Length: 354
Image 1 (cartoon, one colour):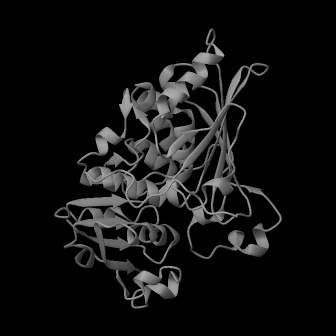
Image 2 (tube, rainbow, N blue to C red; image 1 turned 60 degrees about the vertical axis):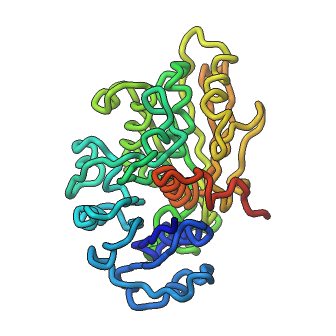
Image 3 (cartoon, one colour; image 1 turned 90 degrees about the vertical axis):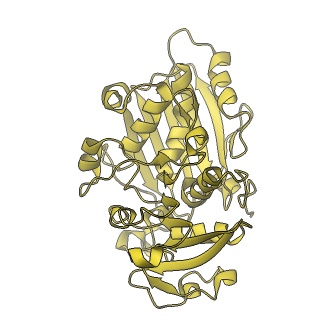
């Protein structure tokens, strides 16, 4: 069976990456692409690398244009998806790459985003532990999916095994991330100009203000089996992203205290048990740590684990391509599960080098 697809926000980075992956998917027909200010222009004017889709023209993003497809992907700025999802009730599968349907807590939404609150959808991180099982079990047959925030899913995947196994204390998590500017979207911003970011590293959203923090708390609460309301007190994270001059990629270094009495063997076993059979989340051998270059273009999260007994902390270093495993790849992987297709279809573990 071939599924018809519409992709909104198709002129942006996330929309373009969704299209790149879907263009190689044997079960998908990309029928419609939409935009706002760029509507009426050829898709390849904004996504010149997508040569197989040169026949497509960007249409206006309206519920009427998006309706009538088997699958709709929404790759819109945060706060803009809800106005369309409310009108797509007859669409069999809708996947939102924005934040509108990620959070279960209205209070968290109000504190970090603001504006209209929309109900949470099934979270699109298949490998994430949630309530003793993997999130992929919730994605099978899902009709509404919230693709993750790239930073949030990277940190959550990094720490969920230790939280679920009870070998680390989630009340003192520290995560520092080196991130590429493509995660901020394609809109022109002075601080993202090449002359502003080349040759420097710039922290942003410092001091607990980044919007992905409640998403991380929510994911780790699910991994530990506690309610989202309890996460505020029992899961505390200091989260600092740093903008670095690479177009794609996240390198997340996350640490947490070791629970008293836990052995080194038990610590590593928690991550090996969680990811030993996974295709797209891979724990590297002891003493090895990933580079962002190794996951460029791949739907892979590579992870290195260190046990620092002097500080009594576990350190996890995880590398992802923020536009693939962090966003579009996670969305396509979740789509495959929802449709009952092979989970890895149209997705690769192989990066691009050099």
